[in-house]
Structures are given as C-alpha cells and as structure tokens.
Length: 264
Image 1 (tube, rainbow, N blue to C red):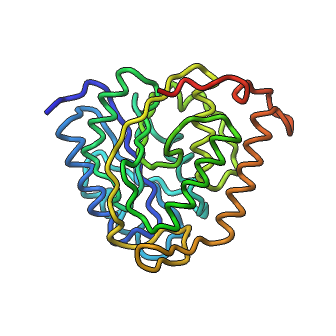
Image 2 (image 1 turned 60 degrees about the vertical axis):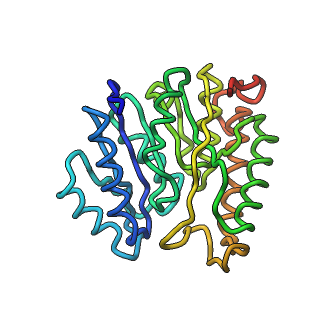
C-alpha cells in the first residue's frame, strides 16, 4: 500500500444524505489515514437540508479526526457546494466526490497515480449505473458542453475529481452558477492557464439510498424525472459561462474558447 507524501483535502457535498453520510465519512477517513500523513475531510452542508444530514455531520465532526463541517447557510445549489469546498480546502491536492456512495474512495489511488503527470485528473464512469433516462440526459449534456466550449472531456460532471491547488487558485468563480456547469468553468480555467487534464476510468455503483435532488423520483432502471427548474438553471448557467468566456458583461476577455484543450 503506497503512502503519499502530498497533503490532501477531500470534500463531500452532503444534502439530504442522512442514510449515507456516516458511512461515506467513515470510509473516507479509513482510506486517508492509511495513505496520507497530512489530510482533511470537509463535509459541505446546507441549512436547506431537511432530513437531519447536518446534525449527523456535526456529530461526525466530534467523532472523526481531521473532519470538519462547513455550512453554506441557505445556499441549496450544487455549484455553491463545490465553490464552498474549493474555497475552504487547505491542502496541496484537492479532491471531491458526492455523498451518495456511487464511487469507491479506494479508486482515488488511480487518480493519485495520474496526478504525477497532470494538473487535473477526472474520473470518468466506466459504466454508469443509473436509470436509462438519466444516462441519456447525461450524454446530451456532455455533447452540448463539448460542442459549446470545445471540450473533449468524457464525463464532465463526474463527481470524482482531483486538482492541484494551483488550478483551483486560478479560478475566478462566477458567484451565481447553481448547477454542475461549474465543472466546465474549472476545466476552462485549467485549459486557459495551460494546465493539463488527465482522465481515468473508475467504477460507478447503483445508488443504495436516497435520490438525487435534481430528480423528482425514479421508476426502476429506466425512468428518472428530472425537475424542470434544474434544466432551466443549467441552461442559464451555460449562458452565463459562455458570456464569461467571451468577455461579455464586464468580464475580462478570455482565450479559452479559442485554444484547443490539452486533455489526454
């Protein structure tokens, strides 16, 4: 088992994840203490969570060394959770994953190997285990983002990503993005600054508890009803980011739309 010399921040947005937050935190803690000497775990909570997730997270903060809770108040958005995690992470490497246990934290070893060669390493799902409608909508989203922003990332919103701090520090986050489009913002910043992006295949598992906040509900392995406001907010976010890329709205002119990315 390899011991890593770098320090690492691992953050996890937890929103209405009562049935999984404890297991997620314990699994991450066990993994990190076996491989890192210097690490921290951040659970990103929200006052809008209604099922007791925040209370469980606060209990875990008292029980698990190196774990702290960062509450983002009334901000409910996924992009807000990611911004909060990135801004509060203190270590050399910054990794995030979701709180639904659809990834195996031990596969962070794969990303740690790749980060020796890249500045960003993103895990793409070898096989996505979600309802077919969700898989189809994810495919459509990825195609759209690749086309609009000239990205070649396979799984843009895959929640298993590792960054060097210099990449995160270079991002001037749009404060009002609410959806996963913030991942595109991260990739574009990396590309604009000449940072390299690597991709590694990771396993993806069926969700065992709860349901994504973006969905009204699921029906077996085929149907997943996505909330209409999530689609609308994603479209708005895409337009806001497109304006940022092209220097509209008073921002600084960016070159990210003109240069091919260095994804490998």
